[in-house]
Image (cartoon, rainbow, N blue to C red):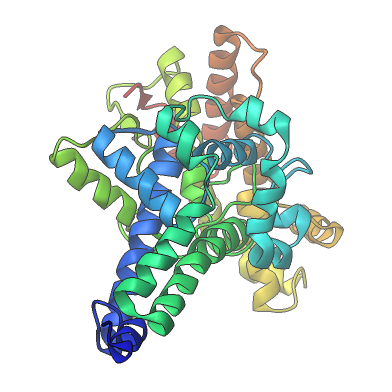
Length: 402
């Protein structure tokens, strides 16, 4: 005869009773495996084809995501690809610049569900994702049953109350951190290494619990790269896991962020220079912004005397607008105009930045025209009388194909 007290004890504590901190550790490990599956498999491998994974690794991630998220690979990849294609427009499935930060941060998963029911999105952006037997028969038609299996496993192993709490945290982890924080704050607040055409930001240099996804601006600058970190102080944990898998023969990165190669012997602009500048355009503009910051620091006292800005906070915003070319509001535009009128040096640097950015935007120009345009830009930069601009131009001439 079955002992009812034994059944109650099993229901209360499960097959693997743990101290309170043990439940915390197990929950953190399981949620971390989930974020690793999202960033390595769904994001870098499936959505962007930035790496190849061994079938064993792919199947493990697919199974784990079925248990812990109920997400369908095709839907996730399609929605994310559309986000990149339509970023910060009305067609972007989850842009906080369009929909508002609160809506994306707190209801991001609902935006995914809504977009998953758009047939055109699935057809246009969902190509190349798994379509094998297990996907057609289990993962897609029964995608919600996986999370119920996870609930049963948690309750059986850890008891009713701990198991239910652990399951709830697992279910909320990706909707909050990925669909909310990364898609929301990652396009609203943070630092920008690269002046991409969207509003993407790096939230912080290191956030191990979201596996490198915090480096969102870097990712938007180089979306097909398997590695997100580009600065010495940034750490991409997802890339560290990929390196371990690569060492074991279970993964292969297909593309990494471009690296600038300088040829000390070069002094003239040629086709290779234009190609190298276009490939490294975000790095070029980031370095140019540094040159403008130096000029700003020299001009700031004179601008303060002319009452171009009233306080340090306004000065910082104005410097960001001028050095990065991110003028948005009418008030910012007016302040920038006044500053440039008061400083011919800043006006020249600002104008030259705009002209440089247009070099790789004019796709209708022939290669010879682009070479001539960039050569003319360098000649004018070196004749401007501005030392930082001349030094930048001389460095630009040395860009070579990697």
